[in-house]
Length: 167
Ligand code: K1U
Ligand code: ZN
Image (cartoon, rainbow, N blue to C red; front, side, top):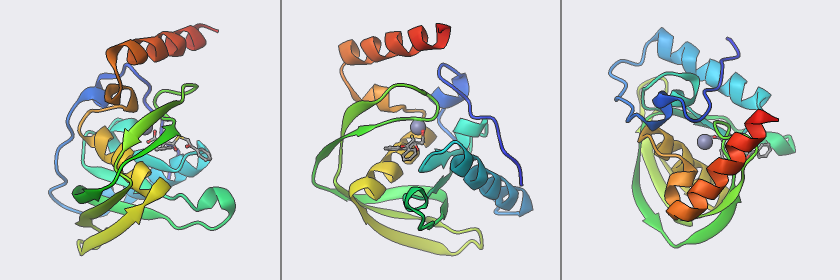
């Protein structure tokens, strides 16, 4: 496994819609495991393949590892099939380091996709887990959390981001 380079805004891969994974072979298994390793090292609680330069529909997440109870998830071709409620919480993004903002998202979601053996999986998630899943699926659609706010707020945050990069 390997630690991969995390692409940062405004890398074009982050605004490109990712393609479906056609075959779950050894290359996808290695990539998924390297993504987990990269996420743990960052540290982060989620990572999508475009963030490591691969425009394919593959995400990993684990909200337990920061509290010593790892529960890694790898989902190929994830689809949010249902969502419920509303929740506003602060979030960050490993591709936009140093900026954080409150984002409105569904409180609970149902996620379908495939595991690395090609078996269909369904997950119910709420709270932080649901938020991370929505954030990662957004990455696959070329969307960042700053795209989910007003233009004024988005521009303010991006100004701060570029200012921090110069320091
Ligand atoms: O996809 C990413 O950019 C990763 C991102 C996921 C995320 C975080 C918060 C809300 C929604 C989605 C991160 O992991 S940012 C880092 C982070 O949240 C964190 C890092 C260490 C400990 C706890 C949290
Ligand atoms: Zn992100």
